[in-house]
Length: 251
Image 1 (tube, helix red, strand yellow):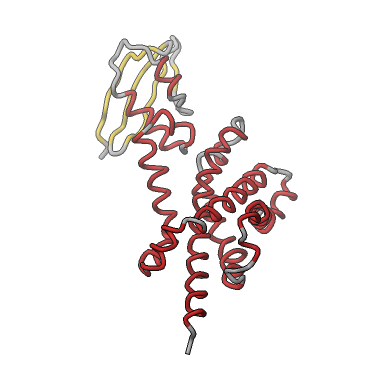
Image 2 (cartoon, one colour):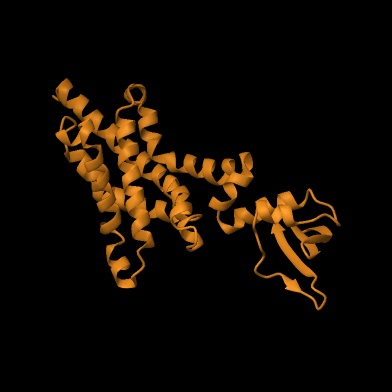
């Protein structure tokens, strides 16, 4: 028969593992936003796609290098003392940075992903420590087996908030952190508020989206055809002035 102390220890470890996955997933979104300041002149993947691509890496790394050790380390270990938060964060950064990206980084000479993974690891540690010290959350998880079971689904909620809610609540603030498709949607929704003859300069300053496949005629008129949901938006401009705007329903 399992003693109450052993049952409590097992439950505490399960909660710790679930929260570690939440922390690692959330850190990919924090890293994407920070990457805008660290790698503003780098490729789009580091900024806009990191929560998606980095998230896939995080799941793999979490299964191998985080979830199993967390099951083995006793909850009363000095490893979890408050003053160890920096050590814990650095350990996560090393696991994420070297265990997955190491060979690729040194072979390609591209250290951007390495820097991103280190930042993600640091945030993982700090977020995880914050979750572990959040007593109200601990009590809620202890009393709700359903919540413990669904905690690993937290990345779906983060994706919804980041890629769907964020652009709709604050499109101007979200624009630079979004992948190309969402940037195009934000730009076109704002464009539809304009009328022929109005300047596009303010729109381009707020939402600097440019169609890589736009065409230009001999007098400098730009022609754009961009999809928006089930519609195709056609607009023409010259000297950043809107000349024509049409919406065609896609079949």
